[in-house]
Amino acid sequence: MNLSKIFAVAQNILTEGIRHKILNLILVFGICIIGASLIIQELSPGAQSRTMLDIGLASIHLFGFFTVVFSVGILTFEEIEMRTVWMVFAKPIKRSEYLTGKYIGIVLTVLLNVCLMSLILLGLCLLYKVNINISFLVSIIFILFELILVSAIAIVFSTVSTSLVTGMIFTFTLFLIGHLSHHLKYFSATSENIFLKWTMKVFYYLIPNLEYFNLKDKLYAIENISIPYGFVFKVFLYMLIYSATTLAIAIAVFDTKEF
Image 1 (tube, rainbow, N blue to C red):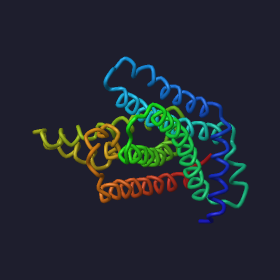
Image 2 (cartoon, rainbow, N blue to C red):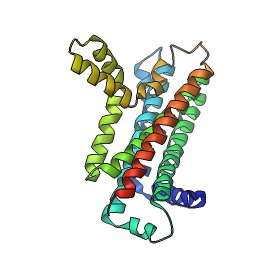
Image 3 (tube, helix red, strand yellow):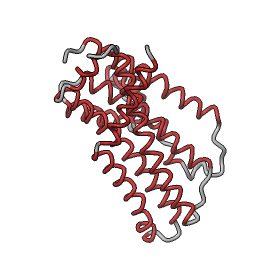
């Protein structure tokens, strides 16, 4: 692969992401939700700090996911309906280079939105003297890890789905199931039906376990406990392997797709 071509596509995708008003609205709405935590925390005296952090991190997570879905959706719509992908392929660029660049561009768009929302939340925490520690920062990093993985999933669904809406629905469904994957493990362990037991076990290992990245819900349980570097590396490696495998599947499908 030609890295210069990949990064040229990624830069173009990032520019398009910034240009589209819907992504700006997602960012603004996420910032408003974080700001609303200042009002909501007044309804929970004695737990103001926890309320601000809980709502702030949940907003970053949720609107980061929306950024992924709508970024992929908008770009896929332009590729199919407006035939912009033909303008790209008219140049000497491989499909694998284009899709890799598209993925990197979406990740950069998500990174930009998450960083802006995180900086605003951090500023509010400093302004209102909310006690934060390394667990808070690692929680944001884990959210980014998850969104990087979800971006690869959204890319593969955009290539295999017959319509834009179907791809978005599949992405949302897998995002939801990924956060409930521990239930699949429980059912596979408790079910007496052998077929159901093994089906649940296979799904548990195939579907991404997004709860690996859900450090924000454990923020107060580990407040006074150092986060082991081995665990952070394990989560990073899981994200890297799953994202690379998913992107490879997307590239293989995209190479055979007719526009």
